[in-house]
Length: 259
Image (cartoon, rainbow, N blue to C red; front, side, top):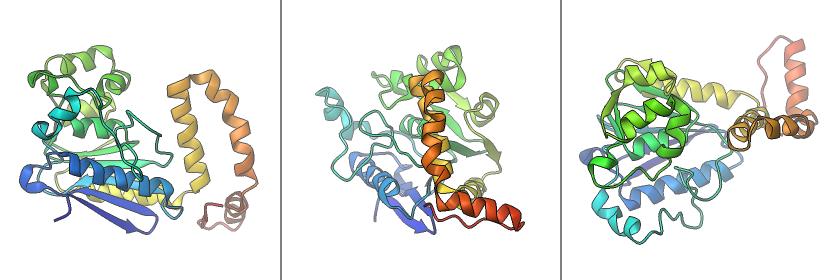
């Protein structure tokens, strides 16, 4: 049985954790399958958005630490192979296409850290989140120490990073960490509907918007401002802009080609 289900559905790449008998605990083999799927999303020109979800009752119980101990002990960290893209984005290149995230049940450690490197998040009511690393003798090394303070505020982040305590889906929604809080069992359907809306939007516009937003976070607002119109120039010369104007005048939905 494959550890990660990967399926193209139109312009969407469905990426599903598929180790439900182990609560989707992430071993190194699963990591590399996810990383390969992210690479596929980035480099397949037909794909416009990814949907990261999990089979079973739980998103993930976290890393399978006995399988990762050697990697952490020698200081080498996470090493994607050729044809892979780190889903945590602590190494290598960033994904330039958006990912929608759907969680249920338990979403611990690496699950939270993958979520933090996605763009729109959906969670079922009752989902439980935690960074448990300090209870296991280590600290979070998949991006939580970098991104969680930015997402939910310094004090809120340290409250949970330093204790290993759980937080609830209601708290995550109040903080803005997740964007949709839904009934259990509806998280995939709602996330897919959002992904479909993104897939129907202008691909060059979506990627340009995401690029500008990420640049503002990583390099600051002034740098992002300086890139707005230079990066918009080639988009304005695209067939998609012509289609956008034509569809507006004809009062119909646009059909974008990504060129």
